[in-house]
Length: 302
Image (cartoon, rainbow, N blue to C red; front, side):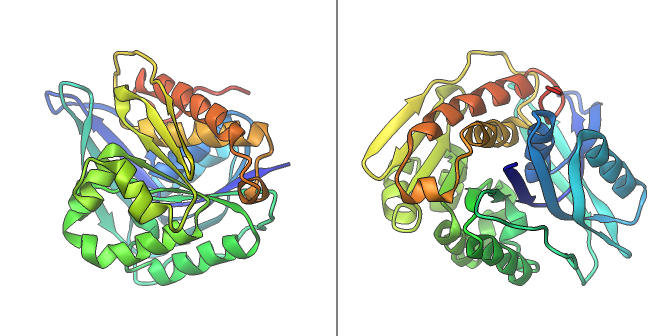
């Protein structure tokens, strides 16, 4: 069975409404959210991450178990605390984030899951470019590449890291070089490259390293860039309740679509791109569903 292995952080999300009142609290983290939705869809998932040896860490692990995500490669660090993420919704249900983190010096001391060329590797966000973790995350990404996994990289770059762009860019470029598919929002590209012309950014910054780029643009839909083509997929017309898990659920739906075709790194090498378009439509469906709730993940399918 094809599996998806993800690497990313775990956080405990607390969502506040426009009156600064707590509306929901649940385990989260970008890759974590995607893996929960994938597991709820019947995809075998494994997570490379870390939690604190505290009550929040236990809640996060229990939630993974309940949803069928394999946590064998999740490290429990003895010192420090599991991180919190506060999401403050504006009038359009978009979120501004504040993070509270207390990590130990030694991190990600784990045995890696089995990796094969039939599987998909999901990576993204600050976790895989964080200078404190970069040596270790780079080793793990290299292991996925060594085993010819299909590698999907979600940039997911936050405004609070803009001042670090120069320091972080070499790691981002290395991730482009490792990836088969790069995904970013129009905001990611604007924050990283200071431009709204993401097609030009694809041609100059991504295509030399990675053949396929997906740009999500909220209500304006999704564009897929191939070396010799560009495809647009419309967004669903909805009134969102919360956009906190929108990008993560898009990733889940997209990867779910790839697993329906048993799509692998070999298909990328052969420039067999048609299943990618259908998989983007699955991503749009998953994203719309999550935006209509306060959860970060789709409802259980199995």
